Amino acid sequence: MFATLLSLFLRRLAVAVPTLFVVSALLFIVLRLLPVDPAAMSLPPNATNDELAAMRSTMGLDKSLVTQFLIWLGQILGGDFGNSIQYRLPVWQLIGDALPATIELALLSMVVATIVGLAGGLAAFYFRDGAGEAVLDLGSVVILSLPDFLWALLLMLVLGVWLNALPFMLRLDPGIERPVITGFLLIDTLLTGRLDAFASALKHMVLPVLALGISAAPSIMRVLRSSLLDVYQEDYIHQARLRGLSERQVLLRHGLKNAILPTLSLMGVQFGFLFGGTLLVEVIFSYPGMGNLMIDSIRNVDLPVIQIVGLTYCVMVLLISTVVDALHLVLNPKLRAR
Amino acid sequence: MAALPLWLRNTRSVIGLTILVLVCAAALLAPVIAPHDPNEQDLLNTLLPPVWADGGDPAFVFGTDSLGRDILSRLLHGARVAMTVAISASFGAMLLGGFLAHVAGYFGGWADWLIGRIIDVWLSFPPVVLSLILMVGLGSGLWNVILAIILVDWTRFCRVLRAEVLVVRRRDYVAAARLLGFSHLRTIVREILPATLPLLITLMALEMGIAVVVEAILSFAGMSVGNEVPAWGQMIADARQDIYTSPSTLILPAFAVFITVFGFNILGDGLRRSLDTRLTQTERA
Image 1 (tube, each protein chain N blue to C red):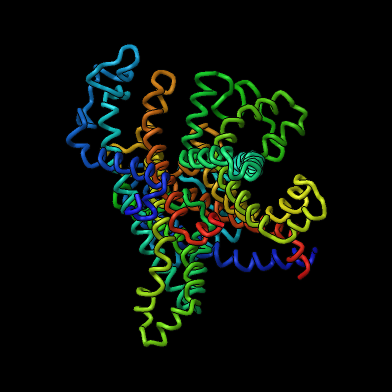
Image 2 (cartoon, each protein chain N blue to C red; image 1 turned 120 degrees about the horizontal axis):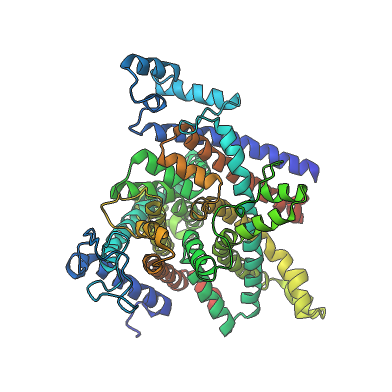
């Protein structure tokens, strides 16, 4: 088992390295299309032309595009992510603050999406050929037609503004001091035993998590239902029934066990989308994560930050798909035997 | 009823098509039927509620936004942006993705390998992030939004269609066409394309819905058509600051996005059910 997992990770790494190289080249080229001069932005407006030329040469902007790219790549590989133009802080520090927040949001949302999606899929399968299925089916199309950021706004309006039931700004109630150990707020509040802060952080996450979870659930539901339908065409289901197993046992022991694998593959893809979806949801709830950092740096044309944030999103997506493949390997006996 | 083509006999397709015809009509007729200029500011009448609420003004049926602009007129004009993007971007993505899918699936070999690797790179970006970065590089404007969506979403067509082409290519009639001396191009166009067309059409309906969402996302982030052109996402973004006082300025454009995307999704769903032979067979069985 360990050997197969290791070989999977090595194979994934062999793909990830060239992928990330191409991604970083793409990011670099696209952002160089911009009609802005990073040198001019790093200097006060009253800088002379000589100072500008000097700055351009320190920043390497007078060299060819390829040389500039290689310099940038070399710096990243050496652990130097550059400095934000607007905050004058190292980019790694900004990412270090923002990434844990986004990971917490994405993971919790995925848990909600999984629970709702699997329950919905089982229900749709259970009520197949009936009115229940039609309702769930129409419901899933309706939910899918409202993108995650509109769910976010709608939930904010109904549960936050009208019912005043839940907070919808930032991560903690005002006045609560934020403990920092790992950077993951939920973990840090627990580690320091600050249950009040933990509860507050959790409450602030309900609306964004619901928005992301609800919009990712229908796809999971649909795939689970259709793979259950496929599995039920197989002989071993008939055989299980002939052996006298109850319908519930057939479903849990044979149906679900086999239908979960295709569902898992889709959930990997879905998790990747969800991770992208955090971007606008964060902006809507002023949630201090990667999405807000991205939009903020785009508005201020903070190129060093945009590049690294873009790259970080890619690294996360590659990580997610590797983890899903590893889970697949662990759960699928056919792959394990190899 | 029997004279209607199969796909029009599906209730979902009909519902979807009806919604979309209405949205299209709104878009086309916007300059004629919009009661106001969508950018005309009436600073004496800001944040008016819709006409059915207390204090509504019949001159502004859906009320006004924080600058006193007529919501109804902006919604109608916003439909123009949404539908232009939906149709052009999905058509472009279909052409690019469909072309590469047929090349990869039919010829295989290094072309398939290369296209597969490009798709891998694309898939490592969340679509929202990639389209935002492209918009940063391209700059705002209607055609840049369309270009960005094409450059992001061609992979959706390419991945699914390539798998379909791989299946179709192995069929006997394709081999027969080659034996009859058909050129590769003719084989693809005359023998393979007709078999992949149903899937292509279904994907296109779904992609139009996605394009509407992406445009709304980009204009919400202020990265789409620019401030002078009314777009739904931008209306939603503007309305956020007035969420306490006039939620209708938020709900109306959100509903416009929803109903349009719903139209495309339910049409796509209906098309899939009636055009996908595998699915219809299993459902009949």
